[in-house]
Image (cartoon, rainbow, N blue to C red; front, side):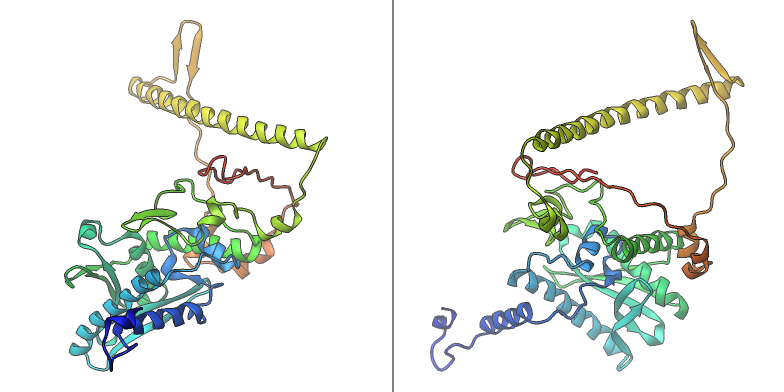
Length: 361
């Protein structure tokens, strides 16, 4: 018992014991965030995780250690806020809400006299060369897009080093192209939640044992709280769990044949991708040679390869138009139509056969 370390009259009281009781109360109490909201702070991070949480999938609960690490960020914010408060007493606003049509965000510090926003983070010395992190820049870019630009704001990300307490600040300059890309990402997340009611797929570059899905720590391999819904046995949806029928002959061989065909198709498509890439490389070589020679065709024996330049087709990127606020979604509503319903077939095998297997569409 922790209390055994302390003689009377201290008894059961200790700072460690108080922290543990506090963390336990936070873990068992209601969350300060609405889990169904889209969070600007997660823009630029895993879009599937956003949709899983908003659709009601329950992640693996954090441990007391996880929560203690999270609260360390609040301590860093307190320290950074105190530095600004000393210079601008009573003029430093905290947790300034940024409300949008997609979701909400909260600016850590807003220095009103300077129209300056500060996002506070913690990090370690070994990550100093990686700063500022792209996900943090994305977060602040959206704060500028939806709030700061209207106030003529400047912005920075301030990192407090855990080992030394030193603070390193990095300015963030508004990037219109990045903001547009992030807003389009928010639109896709919103559509997945409100229209399709289905989580976005796992991004192609993600791996089951690599960040952000999992990462190594001194305590061993750590996983995203939603790992089971992407890579584990709970990969199916709640509907699938209640509507799945275990089949027997004569249908079972058909299901097994279908799985084999899908696997064969994936292998062939992978080979086809290699063939297409090699074809593109050869065509790039031919293009450069023909352009240099002022010719339009190559001949090798009985083979003739002719190049024709086709003018580009003009299209409108409606997602970018909406993201830039030039047209509202309601204005486009009369011109939208919904296509006929179609079947989407999903294949998965038991994770025990191949832990790294992911959903196949």
